[in-house]
Image (cartoon, rainbow, N blue to C red; front, side):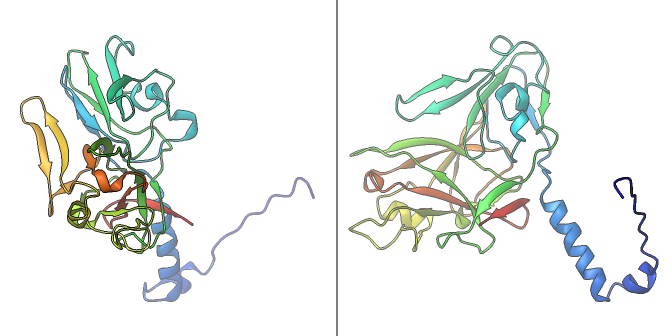
Amino acid sequence: HPRYVGGHFWWYYLQDMVPKTKPLWSTLNNVLKDIDKSQCDAGTQSLPNNDWRLISLPCQPPTHANTVTKVFGENSSGDYGNDWRVYRYDTESKDYIALEASDTVDQGIGYWIIQVSGKTISLDMPTDSVSTPVVQSDGCSTTQGCFEIPLATQSSTAQWNLVGNPFSGSHTLDSMRIASNDPTTNTLCTSANSCTLKEAEANGFVHHTLWHYADSKMGYTALEDGDATQSWDGFWTATMEEADGNKPRLLIPLDNRANSTTMD
């Protein structure tokens, strides 16, 4: 009947689920864990008055709220363009570009942001944001999947890229990998045989040091083996001469401390 309504009750929950060693307990528990992993739990990012911050999105905003003002405007006071502003780095012009209010913002990219409201504000992700999608690849350092960030190159010199941690957890540089199209002169740093950041530098592909801007007092902090990027962190990385023409990618793995969903 078109107006039929069903009422369903788990009459034997106690018998089915208690004690927790029973199989159904594990089944339900795993389902709830998967639901929890899909949610964005990135916390907040402090944004002091009149002090630049280099940030990256730790989660995926919903499509209806993925623009500059939708992601950051809920927490920022004043008019965009006058009281606060977001910039990205353009690898072709090697210059900063001020984003428009309607421009979309994405994970894996580093953004400069500043606000002059006269007070410190806290940034958080929009409602309905979800964990950052990852992909399975042979080059990833974990079977849980990685987020892949394409890196720009240029011939005969280094090319700086402004990228960022796409997850809500910290990630050590030791777990990151560099993959690229199969180079004719090397067997490392390929799609099937990715390399560590140190190996990438030794093979002339990518510098192993990442650079994160702390604040106006501390300036830049060099991140190397054993160091980690944190949630909301943007950072610089530089490709080298051998990477040109091979489409290198920075692979950041899904970590147990970072929530994410896996895509085939």
